[in-house]
Length: 263
Image (tube, rainbow, N blue to C red; front, side, top):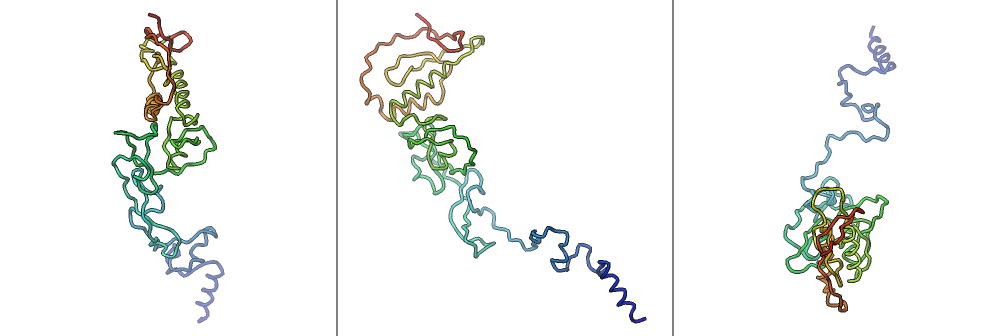
């Protein structure tokens, strides 16, 4: 009769059984026995997983939009790892003129006007990490180089000069050509609409210009005018020598473009 417990234990082992006094979830068993249903390459759950202090970061992408990851220290969860753990720090709220006015990893963003003068100033923004979408629309940076997107320019710490347009040339003539193209686009109107249209007067060009009517004055037009003035382009161009007659009321023609009316 003494052999019955041994026989019973052997039967339980052969049938995959286990002692009834162990918890049903297998706690207390070795990992190999407890995690028989887990994928072979899955790491076992850790009850002692390290939690980093709040506000710590490996990159600025882990911080709020108005903060940057600055400083460098060891990672308390992995002291021997070759990584830098910084702290999320708010960006300066004051104006800036150059990238030197902003902390490392940020840049002075003043899109639309590259020459920062007088009361015009930029804002410190975090340099983004841009995804490669494969598209390259072309924008002009304040350094005179064409970037595929505003994000790509900002990632390099460069503000965008002239909106979503490739750099024609970092010259006064190039600015004038871009302005005239923008004026032509701003003349688009709706001949069948009842609203007042084609009432805004603007220079037809930056150099040697007469007034003309447009349907809307765009931010790019204003930025180009300001850039042209900031570079003192008016002083480098030859005398114009034309006389302009003031245009009459603007009209939206049947082809969908503003035209200058007669007297």
